[in-house]
Length: 224
Picture 1 (spheres, rainbow, N blue to C red):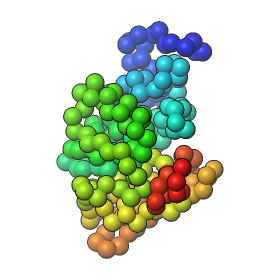
Picture 2: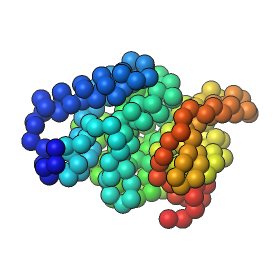
Picture 3: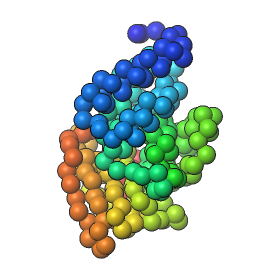
Picture 4: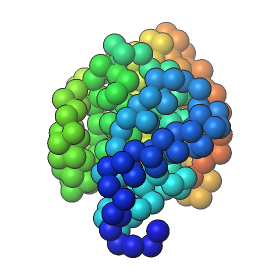
């Protein structure tokens, strides 16, 4: 569809969401049933612009303004699955963006702490998330590359922008047994990695190639 406004209505969006889950997630390698259930529940179309709402459930990222994007549904599910969340855990998200990934995390964890460097995006996401009833999320506008030390340690940390290397501050804010999932690399090519803390040691796994916007900040790619 190329129309500016999607007129399919609630039932049409529900059908599009079901098809997204069946084809893009369950039809690939997303096997965590809690992640699949969260993706089936969260109304992705309310997190995108009016201009792109007709593409909300398609298999590609969408621009949300300020040079940022909402990741494709598969990548959101893959990164969330890699965290291996349980209901009682506390999660730090770096890069609130549209708030869609935040909502998926909030479905699976006890509490989500989300950091965004762009005030307008943080406020927009907060308004949307509160409107649909999420009350287990704390918001901050700050340099996410250094985490949010005030509420550490975290059971899991998810970074939705690429860093040149794994930020030491984020590793330090992981609880023992905690998992950090983030893309690492240059501007045009990165590897999605999972870092697991085991006492004072960290085990790093390569998950898959990916492309994300850059993580801006002290332990990212520097200033914007």
